[in-house]
Image (cartoon, rainbow, N blue to C red; front, side):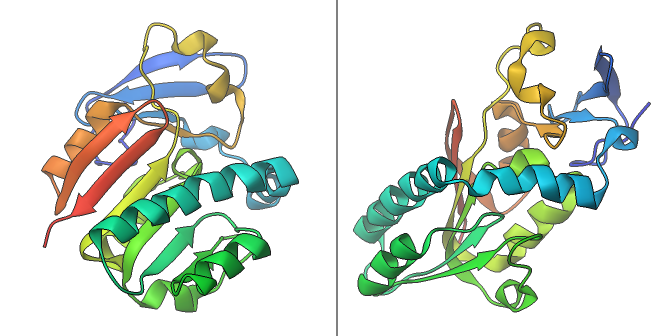
Amino acid sequence: MRRCPLCQNTQTDLLLQDKKRCFYICQTCGLAFADAKSHLPPAAERQRYGRSRIASKQRQLSQFILPFLEQMQQHQKGSLIGLNFGRILDQDSLISIERAGHTLNQYDPFFAPDHETLKQEYDFICCYRVFEHFQYPVKEWSLLSRLLKPSGWLAISTPLLVDLEGFAKWHYKNNLTHVSFYQRKTFEHLAHNSDFELLFAAKDLVLMQKTS
């Protein structure tokens, strides 16, 4: 029996064993996760993770962050300070954010490991296609919770697991850097057991707000 890397519960069951990995499902929070023994070493993970820096992926990232920031401006007036966690936004998009009077810091464990960005609080945090890479998501969840100001917004892009019976055919689990897979139930559990309210969770978008 494996301990859940998110809620730390030991009530987990084998979900799937294929030629490369074993996957387990937590009965408490609903997280599906790969066996830690199959995690890639940091050098191999960095190489595969770096493929996300191609131009098309950069556009997808900007198309996630910029509209979200526009929506936030409708709820909060004045300058906003945000964190792009786990990815690097292109320079043109950063400039447009700065021209609008806002600040966006960036943290990427491989390509922008600036730990100073993890020592302040933020009005919003964006996590675009990074939650699935968290090998021990309890650590990142604790960190993000600490970094966000009361009433701050957390925007997450990660494909939700909606069909456990079809997990074996789900292409998203075939990427060896993808080790954690979340159901809506998972984010409901996080909200229920933390200072967060789950506002939206469907397809590949999750929106949460830290209670004041």
